[in-house]
Image (cartoon, rainbow, N blue to C red; front, side, top):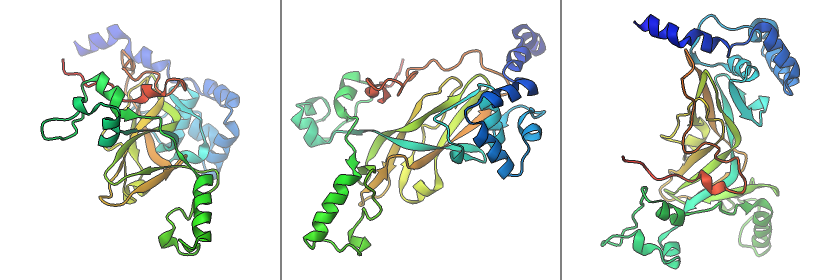
Amino acid sequence: MIDIIRDSLNLSQRADKFYPSSKNLSIALDSSPYINDIVSYIETNKGNVRRDLLRWPKNRGGTLTDIGIIRHMLSGNIVINPFHIKQLESTGYALRISNIFFRLKNAKELDKDNASRIVSDSQKRQIYDAYSQKYLDIVWKGPVDMLSGAKILEAQYNAMKAGVIDSGDRSKNPFFNIEHDDEIIIIDPNEMVLGCTEEAGGGLNVVTTLIGGKSSTGRHGYEICSDAFLGEPGFVYPWVLEVANKHPETAIYLKKSTLVATMVFCELTEPPLRQYQGQYSGQGTNSQNLRALLPKPLKYK
């Protein structure tokens, strides 16, 4: 019975069209704007374009390696935009954080907006209502303004001139490595903000994705996408990242373009009958409507 259903759906034929021939892969490589970077990467790592790139492995399914990611990019099954070869990893692609952030209003800000009556209970606790669009529109602010490196450096200079801080004492200068063009956001202890990747990326047809924080960010107390890490075929947009400060008493800051996460690509054994058509389709693609990145109300029916 399974074989009859498989034959009636033409599953193997549906999948085959997403695996172009060696000749067509070669044509795609020749026309790729990244051909020089790709060839250099392969040869630097002692690979061979014809042997390693322009052919398909016998078995399908599983986590893609670096060469598999490139092959599926050339085949149109993976989108990474912009693409930088230096961010390609052995089994994934490193993602950078953009300068688009949203954060929750605190109780004082909500009182100022005359909104506390809809978010507090009899014990004066602030209650987060994940089921109300009206509430979500009020409680999330942003995109928030980033702090500029130029202003931080100016403030440092004035503080040093006034003798408040010693230019050589790093313990009193938390922004020692800030540069003029940097953009940063400060995240308070135990606070979670929503950020957005600089890259639009994901899988199509026979590729899906996972995303997770990097080891270094985790060791420094940044928590990146601790649970919302699953993609779907057809989701090829900027990713919203839940960025939390795990330090109970210490604020941390994050620079724009910091490498904070890795996207892992997984090859499916066959294409799904339907690709992603969810409520976050197109998120981050309209600069005039960035609040579309914010969470939608939870569904319970």
